Amino acid sequence: MKRKCIFNNINIDRFSTFNSFNIKNLGLINLIVGRNNVGKTQLLKYIKSISLENTIYIDKGINKNKLVEIFKSSWIKISNKEKGYLLNIFQQIDPEISDILLDDKKDIRIILLNKQQIPLQYLSNGIMSFIKIYFAIHSLEDTCILIDEIETGIHVSIYDELFELIANLADRRCIQFFITTHSIDIIESFLNIWQKRGDNFCSFKRLYKKDGHTHSNEYFKDELESAIYENIDVR
Image 1 (cartoon, rainbow, N blue to C red):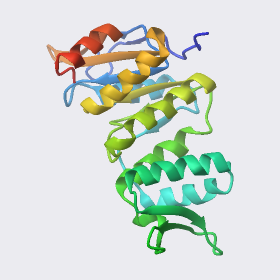
Image 2 (image 1 turned 30 degrees about the vertical axis):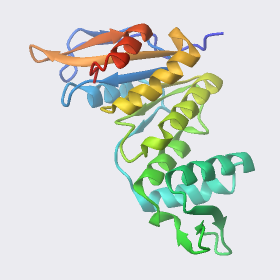
Image 3 (image 1 turned 90 degrees about the horizontal axis):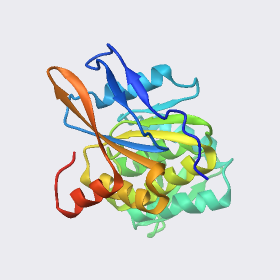
Image 4 (image 1 turned 90 degrees about the vertical axis):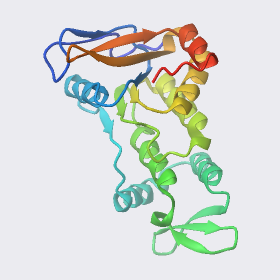
C-alpha cells in the first residue's frame, strides 16, 4: 500500500525567485537538482515554513562538538542492532576502525585495528556527516525531513546504504524527504531506490531559472533511467 505523503504538490507565489511556481506528483523521497542559485535551498526553506512543527532541516554545516554530545546521549539508548549498523557504516568509510566503545567516563572511544583508541571527534567529516543525518532522522515519524546537498561530507561508498536507510524510514514511519544534490552518484543511488520501490515512491525535479524566476521540470523514472544510461547530465 502506498504511504500517504504530507505534500502531494506545492504551490509558491511571490517567495524569493518563485512566482506562480508549482511542483506536483510528489513522493515520499523527492530529489531536487539544478545549477547553483536556481532556488534549491530556498525551496527547502519555504517547505520548512509551511510544514509541521517537528519538520527537520539539515544544512551542510558540521559542528563536531555538538555531534559528539548527540552521539553520546543516543548511543546508550539505541539497540545492539543499530550499534552494529553504525559500526558497519564506520568501517565502510574507514577500514581501520575495529569497534566503538563507551568508556568508564561515559566518553565515546573509537577502537582501531592496532588497538589504539581515539575520540569520536577525530573521525573524518564523512563519518560525522553520516552521524548528523542518522541521529536527526532515526526517531522521527509522520513529518518532513529537508536535507540540503546531502552529499556534503558523505563518502561515496555509503550512498546506497544512506538511501536504503532513508527509504526504510520513509516507508515505515511515513516520513517525506526533500533532498537537494549536485552529485551524479547521489542521483544514481536515488534511482536504485526508485527502481526497487516503484513509480509513486519517489520524484525527481530539476529547477531552472527563466526571466529571473524559478521553474521546475519533472523527470519520470524511465526518463531518468534513459538519461543516466545515455550519460546525459540532468543536474
